[in-house]
Length: 104
Image (tube, rainbow, N blue to C red; front, side, top):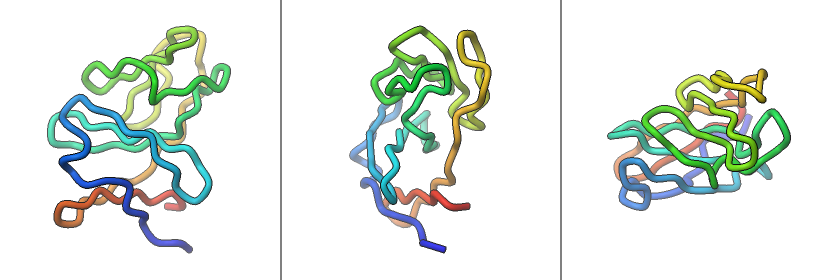
Protein backbone atom coordinates (compact mmCIF):
# COMPACT_ATOMS: atom_id res chain seq x y z
CA UNK A 1 0.00 0.00 0.00
CA UNK A 2 1.52 3.36 -0.99
CA UNK A 3 2.05 5.92 1.72
CA UNK A 4 0.88 9.51 1.84
CA UNK A 5 1.97 11.92 -0.88
CA UNK A 6 2.99 15.52 -0.21
CA UNK A 7 0.82 17.81 -2.32
CA UNK A 8 1.63 21.25 -0.89
CA UNK A 9 2.88 23.30 2.01
CA UNK A 10 0.17 24.61 4.35
CA UNK A 11 0.91 28.17 3.24
CA UNK A 12 0.28 27.22 -0.41
CA UNK A 13 -3.45 26.85 0.30
CA UNK A 14 -4.97 29.82 2.14
CA UNK A 15 -8.23 29.45 4.10
CA UNK A 16 -11.02 29.09 1.54
CA UNK A 17 -8.45 28.06 -1.07
CA UNK A 18 -8.15 25.09 -3.42
CA UNK A 19 -5.32 23.28 -5.12
CA UNK A 20 -5.42 20.67 -7.86
CA UNK A 21 -2.91 17.86 -7.30
CA UNK A 22 -2.14 14.55 -8.94
CA UNK A 23 -1.72 11.65 -6.52
CA UNK A 24 -0.97 8.18 -7.87
CA UNK A 25 -2.40 9.16 -11.25
CA UNK A 26 -5.63 10.59 -9.81
CA UNK A 27 -6.70 14.23 -9.99
CA UNK A 28 -7.35 15.34 -6.41
CA UNK A 29 -8.85 18.64 -5.25
CA UNK A 30 -7.23 19.71 -1.97
CA UNK A 31 -9.38 22.23 -0.13
CA UNK A 32 -8.85 24.33 2.98
CA UNK A 33 -11.75 25.34 5.20
CA UNK A 34 -10.41 27.47 8.06
CA UNK A 35 -7.53 25.46 9.49
CA UNK A 36 -8.87 22.13 8.18
CA UNK A 37 -7.78 20.45 4.95
CA UNK A 38 -9.85 18.05 2.84
CA UNK A 39 -9.17 16.04 -0.31
CA UNK A 40 -11.71 14.78 -2.83
CA UNK A 41 -11.54 13.36 -6.34
CA UNK A 42 -11.59 16.25 -8.81
CA UNK A 43 -14.49 14.69 -10.70
CA UNK A 44 -18.17 15.55 -10.26
CA UNK A 45 -20.17 12.34 -10.00
CA UNK A 46 -22.87 13.82 -12.24
CA UNK A 47 -20.88 14.42 -15.42
CA UNK A 48 -17.18 14.47 -14.59
CA UNK A 49 -16.84 18.23 -14.12
CA UNK A 50 -13.64 19.58 -12.52
CA UNK A 51 -14.58 20.27 -8.90
CA UNK A 52 -11.34 22.19 -8.18
CA UNK A 53 -12.64 24.85 -10.58
CA UNK A 54 -15.87 25.19 -8.61
CA UNK A 55 -16.85 27.64 -5.89
CA UNK A 56 -15.96 26.65 -2.31
CA UNK A 57 -18.29 28.04 0.35
CA UNK A 58 -17.63 26.76 3.81
CA UNK A 59 -17.60 22.96 3.57
CA UNK A 60 -19.48 22.86 0.26
CA UNK A 61 -18.00 22.84 -3.23
CA UNK A 62 -20.14 23.55 -6.29
CA UNK A 63 -19.44 21.94 -9.65
CA UNK A 64 -18.88 24.66 -12.25
CA UNK A 65 -20.79 22.77 -14.96
CA UNK A 66 -24.29 22.14 -13.61
CA UNK A 67 -24.21 23.37 -10.00
CA UNK A 68 -24.15 20.06 -8.11
CA UNK A 69 -22.89 20.63 -4.57
CA UNK A 70 -20.83 18.27 -2.39
CA UNK A 71 -19.79 18.29 1.26
CA UNK A 72 -15.97 18.23 1.21
CA UNK A 73 -15.83 16.57 4.65
CA UNK A 74 -17.49 13.32 3.61
CA UNK A 75 -18.18 13.63 -0.13
CA UNK A 76 -21.98 13.60 0.19
CA UNK A 77 -23.92 14.91 -2.79
CA UNK A 78 -25.98 17.82 -1.44
CA UNK A 79 -27.92 18.84 -4.53
CA UNK A 80 -29.05 17.63 -7.92
CA UNK A 81 -28.09 16.79 -10.51
CA UNK A 82 -25.52 14.73 -8.54
CA UNK A 83 -26.85 11.88 -6.40
CA UNK A 84 -23.66 9.86 -5.83
CA UNK A 85 -21.00 10.99 -3.35
CA UNK A 86 -17.56 12.06 -4.53
CA UNK A 87 -14.68 9.94 -3.17
CA UNK A 88 -12.77 11.55 -0.30
CA UNK A 89 -9.21 10.98 0.87
CA UNK A 90 -7.53 11.33 4.23
CA UNK A 91 -5.33 14.40 4.66
CA UNK A 92 -2.39 14.42 7.04
CA UNK A 93 -0.52 17.52 8.18
CA UNK A 94 3.13 16.80 8.97
CA UNK A 95 4.86 19.96 10.12
CA UNK A 96 4.20 22.42 7.29
CA UNK A 97 3.45 19.72 4.72
CA UNK A 98 0.01 18.71 3.45
CA UNK A 99 -0.07 15.00 2.58
CA UNK A 100 -2.87 13.00 0.97
CA UNK A 101 -3.58 9.28 1.38
CA UNK A 102 -5.46 7.87 -1.63
CA UNK A 103 -5.68 4.19 -0.71
CA UNK A 104 -7.05 4.35 2.84
